[in-house]
Length: 233
Image (cartoon, rainbow, N blue to C red):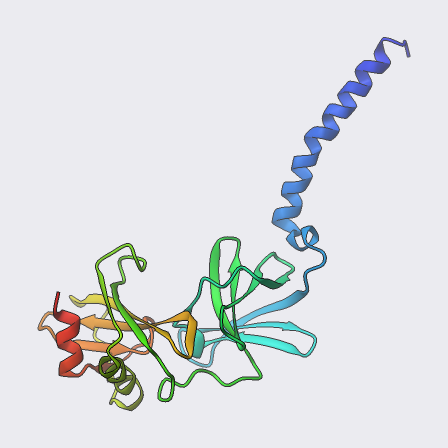
């Protein structure tokens, strides 16, 4: 090999190595994301059908610690507080929720997977939960991006909680029915750092119904007081 060819080979080799770095980085990011953060605890993630029809049961486990998310947590959402406490081997991130000791939120890249509850604690009980704030928003929009209104009226909030916990359920009408769909975002109190989305439906006759969440097929008739508030601009 001549002396002139050696520098060319070295340049080609260095160029190939430099080109390989971003490729290797991207491969690690998508296929082995946990390698990029080796000091963060890794949790085992499992997903099975829930005992509640239409829902999914998620678990995150590491040693003796287990977080779970199911029917009881389906209506919950949270932005978290940016403090990461763990990850899964696929790269999902476990984030603490501000002000909460038993709940965390899990993200898969930028998408929220679910709010999880520490299995050592009971699920939230709406019949005894303390809620201080309530916001009505159309399901067609994310909170803050569409028509909405809020209240701290404790009487109205208790109307919602009472309907969901002591009301007589009715079967939801067919999905093709002419309905206006909303969400009542409950927050504050026991729900600090989170929001609980109660399904709200208004039929063609103006009757207002509530559901424990937007997936539930069991609806409850809203009180006249709450119905008037929902329908008043």
